[in-house]
Image (cartoon, rainbow, N blue to C red; front, side, top):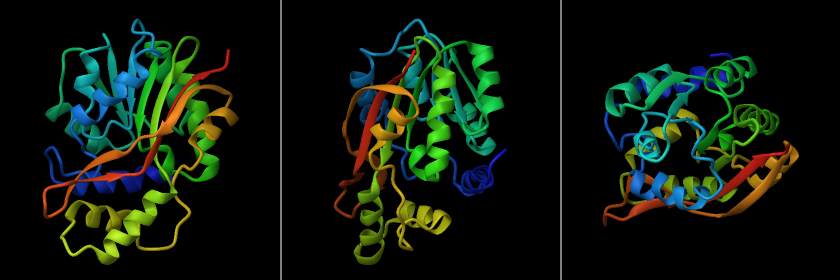
Length: 241
């Protein structure tokens, strides 16, 4: 783990109980990757591999492997990758540890699999502004000529929702409480959230093909059974030639 984010995420995944739905963002593929595929499918070259970056325990990865011949799920946490290999294997899926801010590691993956499409959910918003730009540029190194990137991220409004729910919700919210305790989301004033995600990719030298608001469903449920859905933005972008 070449950056401080690695130890933070490793401790989170190492302490997290195994099984679907324990992670806060662990929504089923039907409301995650399947919904996103309708957006990015027309832009992704299906002849290229697909990298599920920040795959966590791999909940979305096997679904993606039904549509792309080779899928590589990568995460900064070795514990997350180990869980993905056990819980979400598929014949055309491989999992590996990768810090997207480690340019040498990114280049090594690109050398191994060639140009690729990149699918990503909720990674950039966790990074500092400087690291967000480095992340986007390293994604361009993965994509290379012909590859394309889909990214969905929480926005600043999401952190306002965190703060309100933690302060006011009468219902137990165990997954959000665990997330807040580990990362301090909603527990202190923060400017977190990847507002204007399209600008990040444009500054990193991409052509932005599509962008819009799209809620990110979570595994957290209220007492009435309804699902907590977070404000978010998505971008589909292609590195400039």
